Amino acid sequence: MDLDAFRMLLTPAGREALDEAVKILADGADPVAAASALRKSHPADLAAAALTQASLRRRAEVKFGPDAAVMYFTPHGLEQATRPEVAAHRATRIRAAGIRAAGGPEGGPAVLDVCCGIGGDLLALARAGCPVDAVDLDPLTVEIARANAAALGLSSLVGVRTGDAALADPGGYGLLFADPARRGARGRTFDPMAYSPTWPVVLDLVARAPAACLKVAPGIPYEFIPEGAEAEWVSYRGEVKEAAIWTGMGAGGRRATLLPSGATLTASGAEAETGPVSRYLYEPDGAAVRAHLVAEVAALVSGHLLDPRIAYVTSDRLVRTDWAPCYEVTDVMPFSLKRLRAALRERRVGAVTIKKRGSAVDVERLRKDLRLSGDDSAVIVLTRIEERPFALLCRPVTSANG
Image (cartoon, rainbow, N blue to C red; front, side, top):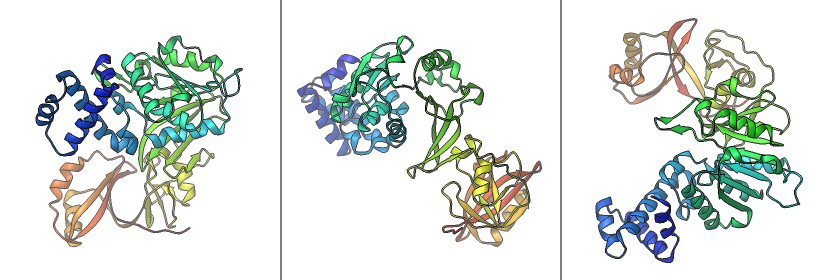
């Protein structure tokens, strides 16, 4: 979809076509039938644009919920957009810090959002009451971000313009928010030097900003984190979504945050010992693992590690914590397909959940090779202890107390 096609969707005729496309797809029509039906009452180019947008809105419901019904998207923009829950968490932190326009009047733009995309973060900032100036290099993306702000009644707090992030001046704002593109011609990139803008350009913007929040991939190498900055990894419902680097917002260090609960964990200097398998096994959340806070999770459950390089914690105490699902260990055995299969048959296990850390076993192949049958279920944990592969049979613990 190009800029002219998108602008057609904002006209009365375009809105009518989009509403009709949404209804046609909701009724279950396949793409060919939907296009044929829509072309009976609208020009072919408008029908195509409307169907594309209607399809994107359906996909966006998983991420944006009810807001998706009035928002606009591109395929790439939808994929890269921050989940509203994560964006709201960051916006709340920024609002709580009292960020205002640097040297500007009360109520002036407080945040400069460069590489704003379709507006996932600027919308959250505006909803938190932070006036935002936003910039993006792509005119179509700018138009969509502007339309999304209007659709959600936030235009009075948002300004969006086409521009090069590298040329932006963050000095007049209270905070710079940057979400550099992490996708190139060959797909997603994990190298910050391949971001757009590149990492040196981003760091130059940060150096000229009173405070900054940089959205980065969860796997960002530690050596790219600026000295004195805080690196925060965010997990949503047990899945690590992204990381953010904060500068000018107080103490640095490492932080893990769980959403939707909002629980947060920071480095305490804890050191985890290693020891044998105890009655309970804890699986630290990925945000804590990425933030190198597994020792802090171990301290919460009075536990220790099975292996110093593997993020599994074991303890004789049963403790409720948001930071790690808990499993009761029923069997511990050196990994052997024959022995594991026999143990599962003896217990009449027909369904398994297989987890692994530090194991080279192909999970799907193992699942087939086990040839399960029975009415019971179990959790298989594949890991390494002192360089030896082990299998732990477990059952989930659904309640715990300290």
